[in-house]
Amino acid sequence: MIEFFIPGNPIPLKRHRHYKNRVYDPQKEEKLVTGCLIRQHSTLVELTSEPLEMTLTFYFKIPKNRPVPSIIDGKMCQHHSQKPDLDNLIKFICDVMNDIIYKDDSQICKITATKQYCIGYEEAGTNVIIKKVKTKATPC
Figure (cartoon, rainbow, N blue to C red):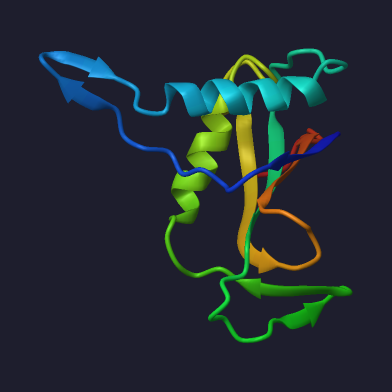
């Protein structure tokens, strides 16, 4: 199991752009910075090709105009239901971890993801938990 926290505002994936018959990635720099942060946590991890499950929690700062959040598990939390879209946040993290944690994000067979405001963390960021899937034969 690997667990780490990526500090900073969660970043959604942006589409590639076209300019003068060329395609470019508008997030090349953001991906490099995030990849460096992830590499710090994965120095002891061998690149795997096994099936994986991932749990992602995206934490956002609470805006000053929000009401007081409720308390869950001793932390003051409230679900974040505005942009950025959850699927784009997931895609960014999964793409960045290619060739760092796993060979390809197609190995991920289960994702649990949440985005929320939370006072329990001092800063915005993304909590990542990755586990190998326990394989056992089950009837289809």
